Length: 239
Image (tube, rainbow, N blue to C red; front, side, top):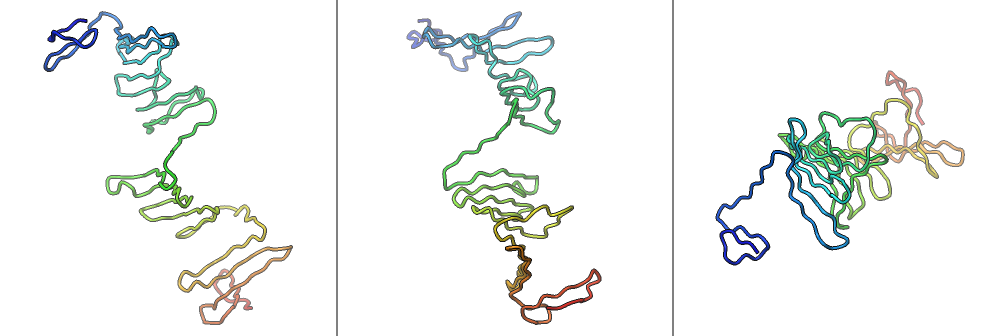
């Protein structure tokens, strides 16, 4: 054992000095080799790799001739790639000839489907937050595992909730640009509910018949009334 600053080194080499630093200088690439004599162990290098006018820090598996992680001069970290596009680039396999968007700070790349996994206990939530300098959670997507509910929050308020039965509740106005493709089910129904008094009107389809029904009154107080208006809001028919 070799001791520098100590007469009783505990390791093969021990440097014992207040503010001790270790510096290795070379006129070429320089690395620290970590190896083991065990049969199933690989040799690893922490490698200062110089190329042209730049250098990067690599963590390399020598036995597999593979750079597992890299940190370049710009602070970009590559996992599975030596040419990270963004601050963190996790590369499983190449997606082809494509670069990350210039606004991206995280890239996940594969030659097939790519997934971002969130795992938490059964009673907790998985959340993606969208924030700005005024509000760090002004918008977010929240999956609540306790109730198996998916919520979308916009401008601080929940705009869309999908419950465990795949029923959706929309807060605000729903605008459809184009055709409303399909409302399907055993007895599909479009229900319109008045938030003031919970009265509703519904249009449904069942067994080849179209039904229109209401359980409340109109604005003039007539109970269970269906009124047809034209585009100019002129009443044309009342049932």
